[in-house]
Image 1 (cartoon, one colour):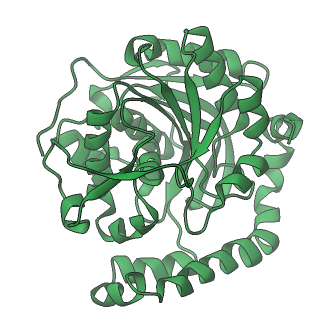
Image 2 (cartoon, helix red, strand yellow):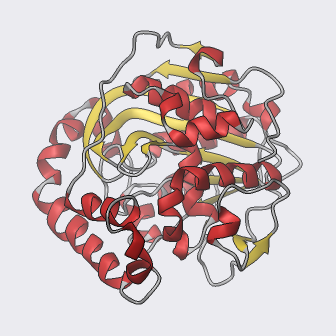
Length: 366
């Protein structure tokens, strides 16, 4: 892959915030991370929120204060042409997630329209990357299709600090997975790390500016991105380097970023900085921060890992490239929405919902 390189030392801004100051704190770290210099005022700006689950679960999705702080700051910085883009998946209802996670009223407050990247009026066109792909051209030999609403726009990603059963951690780089690839994105899971690197390379070609604001007020530990253990930490992060912000978040969670393949590969291909010692971290001193997170695997993720990475890998096409895939989609929906959420999630959510951040969420209008 022909990396573009990073023109100057990558910067990640970090703040330990409170519900009373979080909107101002988000503005502060966005400016420290250079949002005004990174994004182009001559182009529209897309807010790519993160709906990992259409149900409310602390740590899983973009928070309303993360969204509001970002929108408020962009308006103050003179960005007027803004659209929010939700991603839909085979197991996630974007409109339901928009409502349950209280995005809708925030978008309305700042007069920002929203779109579903799978809406009928969105065309998915074949894109020919200028950068040599690691895997996407092999996975999609008939062409890599991306939605026509994204090229030529600034992109602002709103991920959360959490673990992931397939990628160890997930953040700004993974947030593009739902926005740039269609429903058959599950074809990429066996090569998920290289896929995320390819997607970042494509983003650098189609977006005049890329920025990320990451919420670590309530983080997710365990079997992410949904069936996690929410932990209140109170941090917010911002950066113009998707690799660097993911690396810093991974370090804060207790992982060595360069042992996580998508971060290492992106660093080695010049798409950002993955070595924490080479990143300029401003604001909070995180040198001794270690959440001690680890990845856990529940029933659904164990089945998925066996098919994508384990002993059943050689027959995965039978299950995921035929109508049999709908059995797995239904199974995931039933397991997560109708078993795990009503019977396991309530006690997992209890402490987070009682916290000051949980109370802030409750104060936002539906």
